[in-house]
Length: 517
Image 1: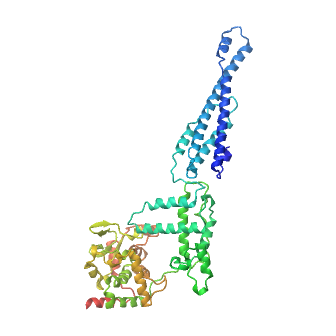
Image 2: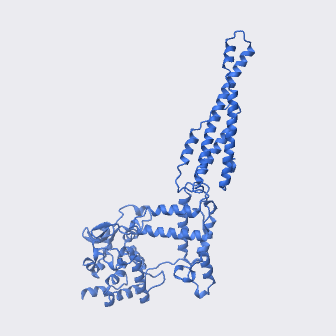
Image 3: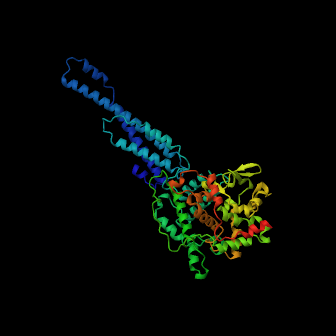
């Protein structure tokens, strides 16, 4: 019976048959119990008479001893069967209890089956008439705990859509409303999860193999990037989108997903799987499987710093009357170049972030934002983003610091116009991209606003070394030796940043001349 019940493919009908087998076994135990009750009848009077009879033969006395031994054995056997009968009664009740939520309570059922299997194995090894009592307290405790299973518990037969949703919802519940980084990562996990179910399918957890990671990557490598922008792909699965795109003439095909994007999807599905499989035996390990990147995937684009000529074109255009009428736009490239700050850090700068440390002004990104007099967590990409950013004298000479201190925008946001957008950093990024296109200095993904951060890194690293450059830009220190020491720029390091020469070849005179007028 246990072999039948422990099959993962068990249905409600099989369970009913198994319960009937339990009932039959209980009936057999009851009959044996009655037999043992008869066998253990009252022989006490006969034994006592033989003991009192001084003339009893040795054979009679051996008979008395045998009767005592048999009686004791019968009593022990009866107690054992009483315990087993009580246990099987409880198991039968536990298994029959949840007819409506059979699939949802699969784990409860499996625990009960293991208990039943243990009892049957115990019963199988009991000698016919000389068994010792079997302890039943531990299985009973298991049966009680099995009835209190978390409804989120899943088993090998649970669909990935159900188990994965449990993991994603639990993570989502930990996010703060202001945690934009965490929310974006949650969106990526959701997108990857949906893509996996689309490509590989929604199957029981026991179905999935590490090789499915390769299958997933192979299909995703043919999927067009920005597919939601093209109506021709509406209503298609990801596999169908790739096939339709491949069928287009060479000049009309849309760009495919990049290698880095596919690698991100693979990492995210591994993350979800590791959470789903935690504590659940029998699932395959995805973490160590090596995926070969398909040849169809678009090669990752390496970002480069902007050339000196591009920088000079941009600076010159920034000070034209038309651009200076929109100072939130005109100042942004200059500040990005001379500080190395990310776009998401720049758009949330407030004039209260400009503070003095040992006589030198810096941007203190460790401070919370002040909105309507209340402190709000500053959106940052990483922990190391919360830092001190040294202000190079050029920002004073070009007039930006004076402009920032005199800003009258609500709550003192220096680039407040972008805050009207749903995603301020994205809005600023798009405006900068359009501007660079107009100037002819934009190259898709390789020459973009973020390239200014590469310019800044090269500038600081060349004059000050890797560690100070990392601290200035908020990069994580990547070695034990670098992590020793202070985690923010110290006053003497701020002074060192302020003392380095201007970026070679870059002409800042359009800004400095504008200020002197």
